Image (cartoon, rainbow, N blue to C red; front, side):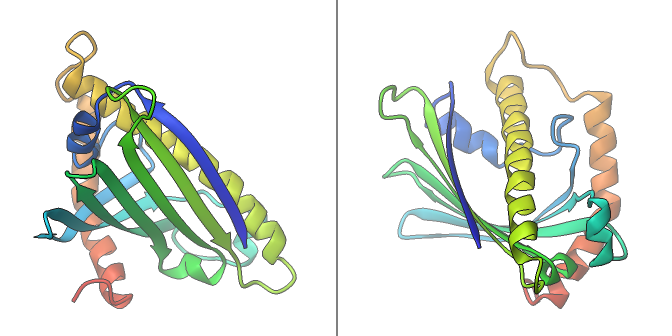
Length: 204
């Protein structure tokens, strides 16, 4: 298993980041995200719990095709907890479906007030990457960490785009034609993602 941790910041308040987090897709900076479906959400002990299902593109390297055949889409379950008292948003994500036979990626992110500037939001990312392919587990896990870093960067770019659109009047703008097209694509692929989640026991 390989472990990765990283830190970054947004020049937006925690309230702004959290409110935008749940409306960040689709956007042209995160075209790899195909669908987003809310499975459930509820409030308990003054905290908001949400479970979502995503389908994303996942271009495999040539050597990856030795172990995986079929569609190159991955399915991600994201569970989040919003604590308005502690001012934290914690997310847990993991991949489900066919790719688990090759590589498992589990992630924890915590969005909280930046220590040095309460008007900013800090993000701590942790990821655990493992593989059960005998003889290749170390190489696959190392590749998975590098792929995770790239995907995390794209994810932050997507959230930043959404933040600028919603909270920065000088940069904000209405949905572009590209975003509308992305929404149409998401609708057509959503049913496939739900079917995969049902098979994995994530939804009934």
